[in-house]
Length: 456
Ligand code: ARG
Image 1: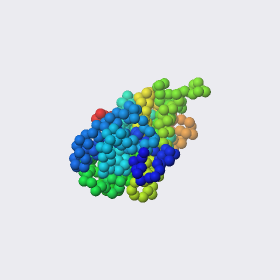
Image 2: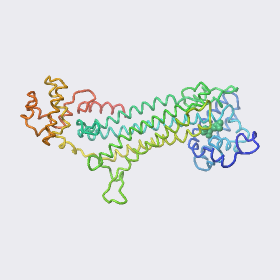
Image 3: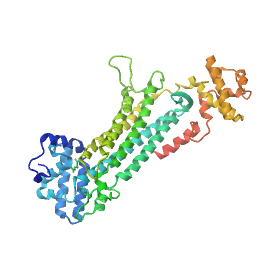
Image 4: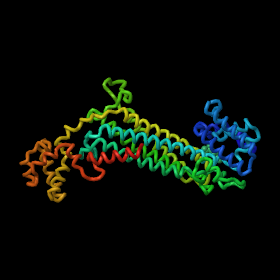
């Protein structure tokens, strides 16, 4: 039996019903559906649309149904089309005619829009928490390897030395913007569409603000057409998930690179590594690779939902039932990846002294030489050109900067004095950085303090 049977001579064909049923997807938010229904019933009672005794009966039965679903006693049967129908039918089974009053002044259109918003609120809160946990893990790593130096890259070519802690803090700061975006999205998600009816409102004297308040929401979506037919906030959340995933994929990529023999910088704990079925020596970074790979799913969800919504006329269209697949997959995947990134990092050791010696006299210290000349009043462009000649000499002679003699240097510019040799360690390079937000130990310490204070 469907909710609208009296209008039809035949019931929906089995294959059509199976095709259109969404219960295997929207069964996931039965809790939100029941919470929304309870607020709706309370409002109906307050507005004297139904009796308090009827409200009580429905309330009690809804709580029982919640238990029945969570215990698996009430099966999510695809013949019920969706979670809303399943719960309503079960309610009528339990309390008879009174149960038929639950849907007064409500359509599944405003109901599903509400459930989705309640679900998004929960997801946003969890995503925020997981992002915070990852930030804390990154901070711990920054602290643990405070003075570890590694080459910083642009174009994946050695550029200038940086502190590993500085590198970790870059991700903390990226995640901070993700958290800000989530907070911002929460503001918009936290508005109730309930009471919009099918599309145009209702002739019954409902109180939309009251049910919104009961649900802990911050007001209503005023325009009833907008309330039932917009999914932009959902798209916004999936786009935030996409940005989070993009950020995570960059860290994953770095972990993959760093764990290679060529870098020999990151060592994953065995409990977070996999082997090869063929090559006995292999220790693979599968977890990081999977996080990198799962970005595809989340971007797919973003494009999936954008495409579902494209050119849909107002108001509700059944196409929109497809929204939840994308929402659920995007937030589930992102939550998983935030968690696993944090766990993986916790189980990763970094080779503290991997680069320090290697970077002594390395060409990535060239900029420090340029700045040396600038401090001696050589115009920057000219200094850059002079140091370029030094680099060319090193490349020609296959030497490091600290393997040329002061005579070599003086031939290129008399401004070079023997104090340049003090510049040729990676540590001197980072230590000499002066600018705010730079990789100097003092600046990184300042940032560390700032973040530790902010993220507790
Ligand atoms: N299962 C539907 C969905 O998720 C609920 C709304 C159905 N509304 C309708 N007019 N058929 O979109």
